[in-house]
Length: 365
Image 1 (cartoon, helix red, strand yellow):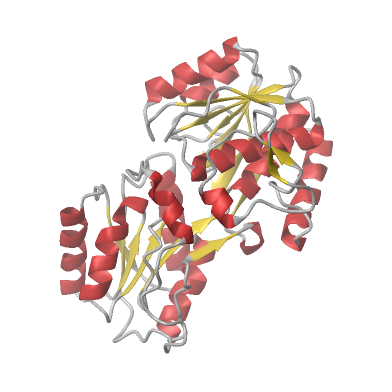
Image 2 (cartoon, helix red, strand yellow; image 1 turned 120 degrees about the vertical axis):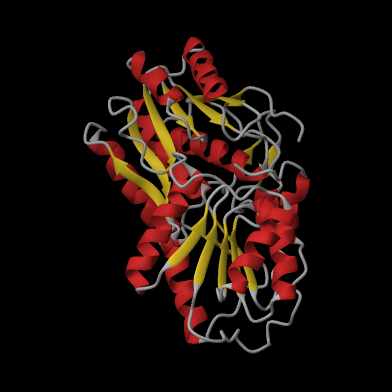
């Protein structure tokens, strides 16, 4: 999915804001003309497809047209060439879709101060006309873990992640924490495939988890192979990014889906209205915004699981539940978060450990 495989993710907490937040809101010149740069094809089965759904829903909600270009690589020259082309055609709102677009978007925002730029999962190089945005996806994975906790019979769930980065690690750990909220004895086998997309590696990882007694999978990836592998063995799984229940309907209990239109619609509206002021640290919000959720939940999932999911969601929205509230222990038993506290934002972005109850090794970044 992205090519930001270094420790750059920690920069979210420390990036400098180029202008004072007291500056006036950004003013768009001319009628809005919007374009989106997609990292992959819009039917990739995951990341780009979720953003494509949001693009279409935003068009419908706002009555605008959003042009798009697929397969824009994480290469600054290609990104800037595509942006230059759109700007030359009068586009004045540009949407990016990858962390790896961050540097190019900052350069473009400086070059075109009268154009608004937003970038999904981008580096937090925010300025008066540039904002990055992302989701507190771990909240959704906690809910998915609750479903898994109700389904597992072996008391062993499993997760497949791409790379051992904070934004992946918090999903895997939250999945386990959610399952343990149902039964503290539940364990999780966590593995990384060191890729964002590889059908063969992902399926092989799923098969290895089945051999280790895992009966519910949380796949943080995009391909259908892992879900089919679990379906073939009469086991269960959780999808990611979009609803994948059609891939393996007898296995997929739910999916942790993104609904990026919850950001696009109000943000683009604010840009058009002249009230948009990019956040100093970007836009990073939770389930209360409607940005993501477990959706749908299969009708064969126990009613008790659905009730627990609803209660946990309501508690997170109310601010009385955090997936990483203390006491939180690392895999080795050391204390990560004391009782009465929650893991800080810095701690989330820099998360480089499994929580207690995980089986597997957290690779060095």
